[in-house]
Length: 250
Image (cartoon, rainbow, N blue to C red; front, side):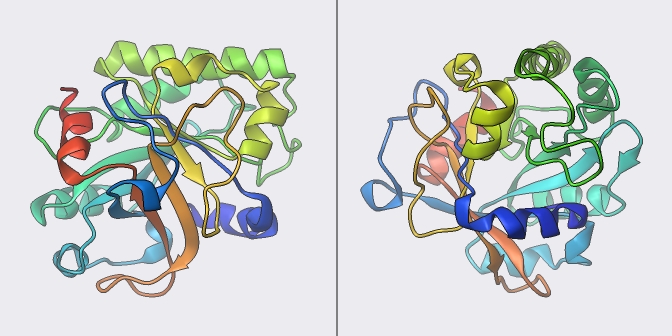
């Protein structure tokens, strides 16, 4: 994902665990060995120019693409990546790197929705993802917020995004960050798909209250034709038909 995050994420790699729950229609499963999984990637400006036709021909079926961070940064390659992925037949979604200590959740949700994170029922556009993880800047692991204040910030973001787009945002996080910084908050998992980030052969422990994952980021050092260097690799916990159903909210 964002290059500014790589050093922090690599330090945490051994313990990274994140979850994603799917919509209610998705059948819960224990892991990729227990059900069909669909391969994907997540990318940002860090990956440089991408040949999306080669990516799709390599079997990649979905991608989360960095759109925004905070309230002033838009990834310079987002527009190109977002359109080219769609044209290549890749189901795409935008993601926003959260900066909870610099502005309200509603402000950042509106910034995302106005800068690439909107949604349309076209079979190739996923609801956007809110990226919540260890603070790579100054201000502390949990951005200087109490668990109560963090819950309020996240709920503000989620409510605003839902109001702007009609969709429940995907949540990307790690088990350790989520449980520590939100106080093991369970409420969002009732509606929001959760994205597992644990670089291992198994998903591991999920955040408190999460019944299953929807997306799993299982490595930061994958390789895919059409992308130079390392790239995050992911699974969707289901087949392409179910992923299209999530995209279309059906």
